[in-house]
Length: 467
Image 1 (cartoon, rainbow, N blue to C red):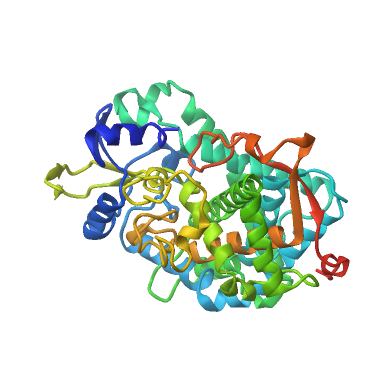
Image 2: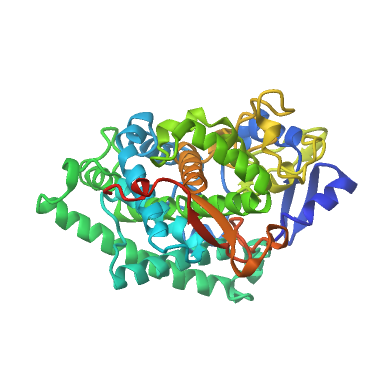
């Protein structure tokens, strides 16, 4: 968990620290002001990725969006996602899909009759189904036994991906030792890549067959249909996709769009269980806006400022990616009188920035959503890359392209779970005793998954709408 010890170094050496990892110069940044220097003032110079084994052996040798070199091809992939998946029009067109999946989640929890729920697993399944219906046009994992086993296997693959991507692989920093694979990381990466590749080959083959048989809903408006057409016809500007390009993009969407969302909702609910007064205030706001006879909808979200503040506070303390994906300096540059040599790897400690007392003077380690409300010390601060004290989605040119969907899904699922149920821990455990330790990996997952017991709090008719 490298994001945790770095702030202690910053107290001694300042917010910009130069380190040497083997033969690689590494610069770590742990304050909002310093992050703004790198990600705004010098953003163009730090818009590419350094070489790393994960991008090579899992992400199709840098052919995905997350690790593609900065340039024309990266811009084309980003434009594809921005126009066909995350634009305002597409978000609105598929609102009913997200609503249906969240209703399905709530109904499934309610049918347990108060039985214990693994929150992360349940929310992950919902996020995955909502995403796949937009990307592929259908649920990839159904309700049957085999499909549920497949969904669980896929979730394990994503978790393993995030764990392997978070490993500081010796071969990345001492290239002359890379061939030895001293930690066995590359061997595991290649094996995992094979599993993902087989999974995506199957999805693409099934989708092509469905297109040929005229079985694709909406005339092929889903993302995968568009990608397949681009492979065959091009994008009108002379660029044609390959099957590898499509699989690399699917890997980004499936991995980044599921685990990060579900882990953030899980952290939010854990914090609310630990702070019952905040939970009650949130429920009062939800009841006053929505009432007790229906579930929350996305159109309710703009009218829920306290719920939005809870989500911001969760992102601050528990950012889904605590240490940013690495960037690399394209040329020498000078920042705060420090020479940053060409080829230096940049790591922005998003976790440390969210807990920096110089920015968050009003109790940086406290869970206090009120700080974002009108009159609060951080009124108006958002998570969209403009306020560098709170950048869970990154900032600059390589800010997360799925920010709009990720933020909306976290707000929507958190609002619905808080409104529809009261939550208690199992075995009589009190909120103060809840384990809040973090697990190792690229994403900030809980070391101990949250298991809680829900109790319905709305009119029974609210849980039985047809999905």
